[in-house]
Length: 148
Image (cartoon, rainbow, N blue to C red; front, side, top):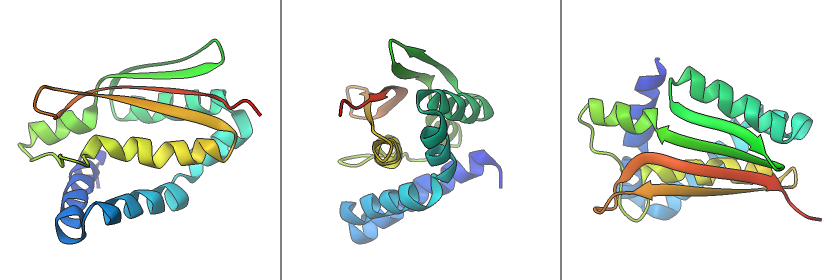
């Protein structure tokens, strides 16, 4: 399966679960993905901290051919998504993007911050929406070591 196909499957799965069972179950799916399938990110953060985040997102977003920047500045990992390849892929295939109270773009802030928190990091996402509440394909994530 190509990554582009996976994006469509993700989107359709989120919509199906939301329509069938409601938002609680979509969040439960995201929690399960975070706990069971974010192992590579977990290892990189545990072993390398912010540098591990740089390695993870730099590699993953490059593989997805995203328009993005990642950097570490003043002990903060910064990821700026200028054009999300997932949103672009769904639009190019004329797919209705999972939206509303819960939406496709919200899977990122549900998957990754719990992994970072396990290792003493906080992570904050800012997803940009248009006037109709649809994701624009732009977001910004910041992560930093939590004060203990």
